[in-house]
Image 1 (cartoon, rainbow, N blue to C red):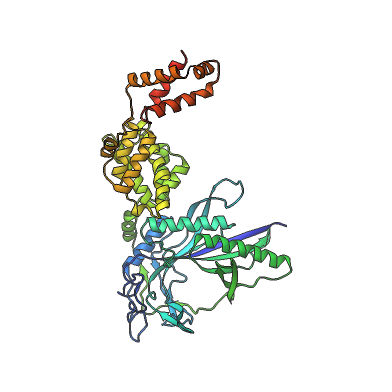
Image 2 (cartoon, rainbow, N blue to C red; image 1 turned 135 degrees about the horizontal axis):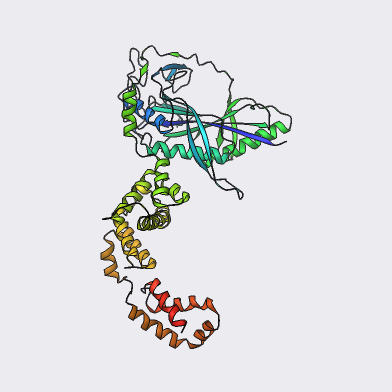
Amino acid sequence: MKWEIVIGLEVHAQLSTQTKIFSGASTAFGAEPNTQADAVSIALPGVLPVLNKGAVERAIQFGLAVGAHIAPRSVFARKNYFYPDLPKGYQISQFDLPVVGMGAMTIQVEPLSGNAKPYEKVVRITRAHLEEDAGKSVHGATQGMTGIDLNRAGTPLLEIVSEPDMSSAAEAVAYAKTLHSLVRWIGICDGNMQEGSFRCDVNVSVRRAGEPLGTRREIKNLNSFKFMQQAIDYEVQWQIDTLENGGKIQQATILFDPETGETHAMRSKEDAHDYRYFPDPDLLPLDISPEFIEQMRAKLPELPEARRTRYTENYALSAYDANALTATREMADFFDACLAATLSPSPSPAGGRGEQVAKMCANWLIGEVSAQLNRDGLDMTTCPITPTQLSGMLVRIADNTISNSGAKDVFRVLWAEGGDADAIIEAKGLKQVSDSGAIEALVDEIITANAEKVAEYRSGKDKLFGFFVGLAMKASKGKANPAQLNEILKAKLAG
């Protein structure tokens, strides 16, 4: 009988505030241990938490971005448990009344293997609640001992909980990537997974088709999409093998070891773990007015889905191009700026020239620019070419001043040295030959020198046309206007 996989994610996104959620201590990453642990962070007697407005604003913006309900009143609670890096003995979080309620995200799933085509899927978001981060245990800080760094304690987190709507590692990775892109797009989280700003816990269970949900195991603290895929694949196979061999799955918290590619249990976990939640007596309920929600809505940038729709409807770009251009907000903003500069002074988006220029901009960004960024280990935030510089080159392609081959030469210089496309074209002599008389003379010479090949072509060997084009481009040092060359060459070869 076929096995079904059931996956849900809990994602912790560290909010981009400069100070902690309940105090004025810095949230900057990389400081010396415990230098950003203020009186509130280390829970000195008598200290009181004060809620960071910026954290609330970011939570609301996320909720609006996923079409979620924003609670007019939410409550902070104390989640009681003991851990060495939790100085208060409890974590301030939200329980039954979170700030963000039900929402949903549409994801584009790229199957990880086989010939399956990409597809769309809607993943429901159960809730997103505000909470404070714990500190960090540093194992091996000194020989044979574990140190406690409380710099991270009190850093604001938004925990985003999905419904168990995913049924493969590919879907889970696509959801996590979409969420990662969104929180960066709207500016509420820097998404730096290496620094722990975006961490994922994955709940995995399996069941036979038609049966109730199986027992889940939670893979904790995944900070890599690659490791997420590997962890889920291993865990799914482990659970299936265990059940098929007559074993039982015990609910547990587990860790993934990237070196072995295996998961292993960290601790068993009861289904109803008693954290003894109760409302925090030091924090008033959080009341959010409709007017404040609308203020947050007005601050949101154009969202990825809306921008993809604009690209496909206004510029007739393909869904693939639109998705690639909106992979990051920086890429989309670069495209918009480059497109506007290239279309100037007539930036009308509809039809004709607008569509042609948009496709050209998209091709260069998705192709040459992205490839060079990857080779140099850069991203759009550190791209050495500006939208205006790239636009200057694209204008010269569009008006046939340079060929695509010449454009690549210009691009390499712009990337390495900067400057202006027109100056580079002039300095390197890259202007195309568009003088029909000069091209005709060149073609005449080639036809005269290759009489036998001309006879073969005229006898029906049409594929020889490429041979003549190659000779002509070589003779012109790549400067002949390709469209004019082809037209003249066809006419001459036809006799």
